[in-house]
Length: 137
Length: 394
Image (cartoon, rainbow over all chains, first blue to last red; front, side, top):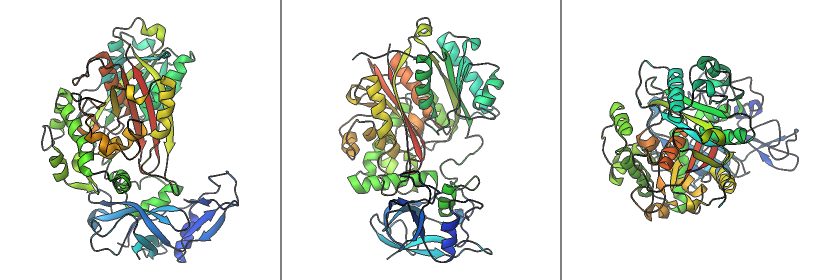
C-alpha cells in the first residue's frame, strides 16, 4: 500500500522526525546526559530539560513484539488482508511502532527477536511523507 | 487485620439491557442513578458528590449535574478510560474521608452497540494532530492488535499458551450462563452459541489479531449503571449492608524504550491498594478484573499479586477462576467477554464485587468477604491506566 494515513501538521514535536523521513533518515533524540528520548518531544523524559539533540539511527533493530491484524474497519486498511503491526527495538535503544513488509505470509514469517531494517515507503499524493517500515534482514 | 472503614458503596444498579435502541446514554445514566439510590434507600436530593467519566451526550462535571438537576458540592470528571470507575471509587474514599461529601454517585451510560461503534477494530487514527497519533496512525493498529502484542510477548517470554488463556473465556462464560441478564445480552447481540464453551471452541473461533481469537475478545454492548458512595454515618441507615472501600491505588503506564510490555500499571496500583487495605492477595475471595481480552486478565492476575510474573499459565492450570472450584474466583457476572461491555467496563467490576459481598451474585461464592476490582483503561500494550479497589463485606 502506498496510501497510509499521513502525519498531521502543525505538530511541533514530530515535524523534524518526519522531515527526516523525506531524506531517508530515521531520526531520534538524546538529552544532554545521553538519555534516548522517543517518540519525539521538546523535553527530556528523564530530567524535563529542554535542548535535546537529534541523531540519525542506523535503522537496524529487532522485533520486540507484533500482531497480525486480520479484521479491521479502517478506511485504507480494510482491503489489505492480514498485515503486521509491531514494536521495533532499534539498536540505539528506542522503540517504535511500525509494520513489517517483504514477507509472504505475516502470520508465519514474522517472529519476536527477528532482525529488521528500516526502509521508507513512498506514499501516493503530492508532497506526502514516506512512512518508515521494516523488512527482515 | 484492622481496616479503616471510611467510605462504603451503599447502592448499585446495572442497566439490564445490552441492546437498548431509542435510549440515550444520558437517559441510562439518570435511570441508573435513581435505581442505585433506591437500592440504598437514599433520595435524589441527598446526592452531594458527583463523579463522571465524561461519557454520554454532554456529560462530565460541567454537563451531567445540569442534566440530572442536582447541585453537588463536589465535582470530579476523571476520565482515564475503562478504569475511570475504579478511580472514582478511589477518589470517593479520599473525598468522603476528608468530609468533602457524604453521598456521591458515579454513573455510566453507553449505546455503543446500537450506534455500531467498532471499538476493537476501528483503528486508532481518529482525532487531530498529536505527537503520538503522528507516530502511530500510519500503521493501522487496532485496539485488539495492541492487546494482542502483549499476548505475543507474554507467550514468547514465559511460554504462556492460547489453551491457558482460553480457560479465562471458558470460566467467564460458565458464570455468564448462570446470569439471566448475561444470557439475554448474548442472545440480543446474536452470539452464535449462547451456551457454555470449551477450550476447543475458543481455539476454533477465528483469529481477530494474532494471537487473539474472537472468543478471547469482549463483546460490544449498550449498557450502563451507577454506584452510590457514602460516609460511615450514612452507611448505618441504608437499606442493605454496606460494602466498604478499604483500599485503592492508581497508576499509568505507556510504551517506553526498553520497557516490559508484559507488566501493566496494575503492578503499581495494586500494591498501593493492598497496603492501604491491610490485606494480601491470598486473602481475596473474588477478583473482578477488566476482561477486555483474555490477555488482560492474565497480566492482571500476575500484577495484582495472585502469582508471580510469567506464572499465570500454571496458576490457571492449577484451578481457580470458576466460582465452584477452589481458589480465586474470577468475574462471576460473566465479564465483558460474556455479559456486559459497552466500552468502559470498570463500573461493572465494582457492581459485581458489591453483589458478591452482599451475597447476591448469580454465581455466589459462599462467605465471600474480600473482593478486588481492577480496571484497565486505554491500551494495555500502549498508554493505559490501572485502578485497583479493595472491597470488604460489612
